[in-house]
Length: 353
Image 1 (cartoon, helix red, strand yellow):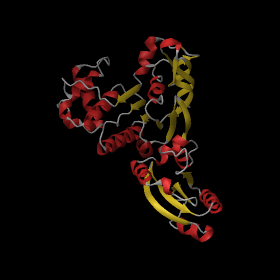
Image 2: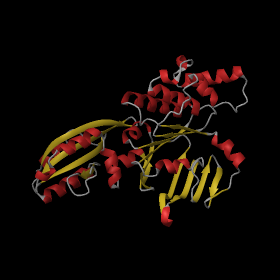
Image 3: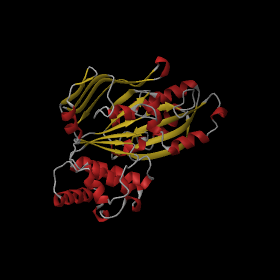
């Protein structure tokens, strides 16, 4: 059963001269309990607007939304009372790129602020706040002020505060975008830990596919207000269908920089550049040698990388293939038989443009 069920949701914003911006268009999405679900797309794709409809911080123009078995929106109309909605919102925690901490009070007081309507006495309030800080490994900073903390530590405080009312859903809206790589990894590890320890459903909104690769088990790719591809992370990563998805799949900075450094306009008619993505379990190290032996093409490796896709090693190669059209066609056919995802990079429509 879905813990979040979004059906045919539209979000329209009116503009001047009777124009309308379709920020979200006919989106359907189901999130199961315990998922870490990544929603990835560039700025303006509509991902944050979509997820804000989950707790009706953004009311949709059309569609149906059900959360934790309660229907919030049906046929574009709110069907839950505002009083009930207020209660249900407490089951949905949110963290953002801006930590939104109160700088004039201590860390423990920041967490306690989220519990002001919980009916706890002062002793219970402090105990609960310290428990939450301990959960995010920050109990030793309880009496510090936000300004004294690193960005990663401030985000941990924000996470502790978001968990104050014991939500079963946590929405992370670009929460790692302002952090350096080390702090980003620590926050992602924490979200993974909370997902396991608390059976917390996590929605990770990001423009960084690397974050999705590290912890998500499912992913939806958004473009121009629509979900263009979604499903199990492994399936989407190894078998992307859309150009934007292929860009995100192989779009690490190293790969992009490698491609941009190549003088693609100098290739001759018998040369082509391909990106190969594959599971280490399915492909041996001899695949390049096999191509030469079986097809007679020369393959030069321009870039190679192995990374973990939610703990599974996945390889990415950028290669130059030298051979006539027939041999290149046989090359692509052979690679696909070996369960390699093949994307040509030097043609018009290059996914890194």
